[in-house]
Length: 326
Image: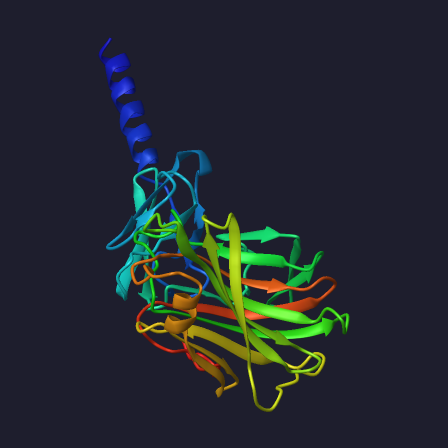
């Protein structure tokens, strides 16, 4: 009997010691870059070797923002906080009594949004209308299928706070397919009827024609009393800025806190207009507190464009069509 008890005790000790013989080796914690914009979503995953996959557990942590998935998986999605700054992520991997932790530092910039289209997650947060979107060599390739194809960021329910004026958007673009009668490329801010007015601002848009270089603003309001939209188009005087096939340009559209609108190409101011008298003429009188519903590009039928480095700011900076250093 004593021998049996001794044998059982030896087996328990052996099993307990086996449980402590696990192995964990973390090779990397991958974050697809270490600079992100506020509220951005970043897919993260850990590359690890363990002695027993079935006994391996994963625990994720951060000192700002949050993770969207539960613990237990080798991958997760980190949602950056709304405040710019330096933050740290970490994952702890455990297996049979052994554990290892790997950390990564992340910088949250003051950008409202940024995409360089280098990863397969470029389409997060966008909505396409009459537009085919594909990834192509670190760019987003867009092909419009009607006169007003759109690819847009919808801000409602996307961010922790409303997006308001001032607002600035900058995009690098080039074209390789165009119908010369339908070569319009547009950047547009669409607004919410935040104040529930009968007459309200619908959108502000800048349009350029790639083959002629001609530009124009369109400011559109919705007038419930007239049962539809009313708009004003303001042609841009001066020397046209043509864009040759497969040549990159950087276009930046901004509205400042005083409702002046700007459009720059490659550091050159193409147009600046005061929106206040235009909105007054359209019957829009209550717009200082409106929120931006969407930031978008819009293209004519059969136009194919490659987009890169899409950036949005709401900190009062007027983007000037010059490269952004991140």
